[in-house]
Length: 174
Image (cartoon, rainbow, N blue to C red; front, top):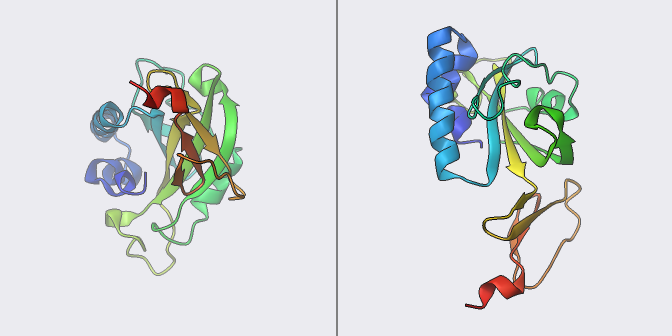
């Protein structure tokens, strides 16, 4: 999610969310979603915590314009010191995603897509949020998300930063 927070369409939308820029950012988020099926949705949230663009407006129409300012993950992401870091939140039921359970990872969106934003105060323009499926029934995989980064070791599991993606052994037999 940190890389797409540097996408020129996403940065432009964060800088000035005009209807044209929101439409283009939405299109770009849709392209990313088509390639990364583990995401339920991708959001661009302005500095006040209002979702200005999302990648699946047809599936989740209530998201655009909603406020996530009260969410801890948003507040933590908005306070990140640079664009090279990210925030992870526990798996939770997300009403804006029609009650789906999702893990949320966020990064800050910086001016010109730069890590430091090009400003001395290093203020984030906006927050990029990736909402991950808690499970992927098509692939038969389960995402275990551990924000505290305690050990979640499991033979055959793929370690991935804040959690594990587990593929049950019976799926490996063909």
